[in-house]
Image (cartoon, rainbow, N blue to C red; front, top):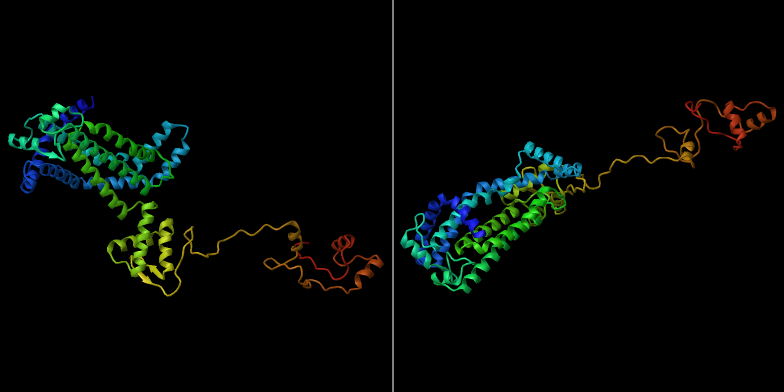
Length: 433
């Protein structure tokens, strides 16, 4: 069933058989002169060289894939907000997501472009190897090249042999069923494992898994789906196609490792590891020694208060070592303590503005007569009022005996009735009256 589907798809891309076979033949001439024209090394390395050539041509698409992935990372907060706002309306959620993609010019499918573009060449190679297995001349492969390809074995497995071939079919190619199945099984496992590791490396080191969005769920699903697809479909692929796909998986894994280590996503674990290594290197040499290092430092300095946690840690590490990062990306020694930032992006030790503490009712009453802005202290003696002269100490008792009103009018009576201590009293401010 699967074999019939693959054959049908490869027939659609049969028009690419001629250019694909031509490229393989040109590489075969080179490697055949070194290892012998009928050896598995000559034909196997020709297929590997085909993969390298295709992947070099796909580098612009790979760059576009990286940019698309970065754009999706930048949209994570907005996507999360849409997801929470319309969590009970999946249709509206999808509409808002599509609207966000359109406004920002982001295409989630851009991350799949390299695989989609490679697929026609993959099926064209499958069509070519199937013709070799059926002893048919195909593309630019004539009878002499066909005989040579049928004799080529890779670790004992013929180039056109498949895991599902019968013992009689494999015997016609001059090989044993055990050799073919062992070699194809090992290659299928390596192919699936390399695909899984590549996707897992992306998910664990170069993205923020704390944000749960449809894009993140899609990437997580692909991490498990693709290896399973290769595992079940690999048994229907000829050894030559397995060589092709294993080579392209290894290339993708190495290419991604290089990109993640050199240009990681901001805020990711990969960026933390990269900045940690850069900090040790800069502190050791007290300078940025390459253009790349200067560009990294320059970009971090330009962010200012918008630096993430890893970038602030990098700047603080330089400061503790007595170094100061400059706007042009260079690093100079600093005689004074340089600026260390806290988690809010502010210089450490910066006094933060605080709201005044709410006073209790008794505190407000005791400080009612104090001058605004002055400190109130119950232990300090009250200053005499400037509005009126203080009465003698015996004035209050005399006024009480004579039935006269004490100075201050009704305020005096209220104080006398409240049983306050006799003697010199703190006069009330005019605003209190």
